[in-house]
Length: 402
Image 1 (cartoon, one colour):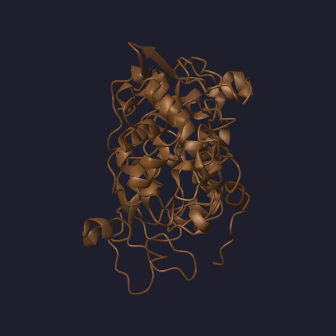
Image 2 (cartoon, one colour):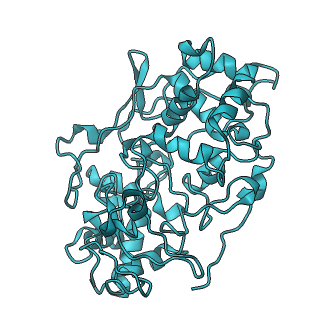
């Protein structure tokens, strides 16, 4: 049996999000923030609360392989529709950068599952950033942020790109002045945050961005249909791939634990850097803990088929190459002179070519963008959504020399 788009609506409460007012109105009409929650959220006592079949499961995702009916970690919900919608405009608005050239969406593009198809992202003035941009789908469930896990909230995470000299290059003082200097944003912030009437604070910006990012829910894939009891949602090879994924031979699920497909821990894997690039110490540099040298956060595999290239360095161009890395031998890519405390799951499963192909096929069943938010047609700042950003967006993926 084959499933069309309508079949992928997995018994999830999907309230229709408000239409972007700019899509049907003249540019002179003021932007109106949505009064409705995004799809998969329900408006309860003025705020949006997630509704998903996984909420019916009492067994929460913890250490282990994660059964098909395992529950999810807590999510950051409870934001108002206006706060979420305001965050959507801010996410796409290059006004948040120092030179009005890049936005959050420059590195987290909806068409690439909120990553950017580059080995390493590029910020203002085309500067290359040190690491690959991770997807933002289901980020509201996560408790660690950045590849090195240094932030523990989405608000803390926002400070990184906003004020990093290589990314958006702004400062706290400049951000506040720019946003308060735009009449349309002053009006919209008061709608979303009544206490912003006298002045918009940077904390209002961080909260709005958090509200939008936490609303990006992807739990409606073919895997989710299968997990809910629709056996024909997956092919024979995909089911075999899932069995390999969850087996005690491959042990993929012990780190990429369903249903979020990450245990959110830091793992030292010994993945290679691109040729000519210095070794990245990852979490070891942040914590000062020698055993975490070369350690990075285990990423979620939701929509992973759409987020090439892979790993913190963007070193692997394909999912197959990424999967194959784990079967080529423990520590085979560790640079000479580095003595890393490799995660104990990194060993030599010696998967066959067929098993690797089946694993890749299974990973493709985690794709779901049915609740992708609408990109604004115009921005409160008056800036062009695709002006200078186009030059970054249209760069093809860089092919690295092994």
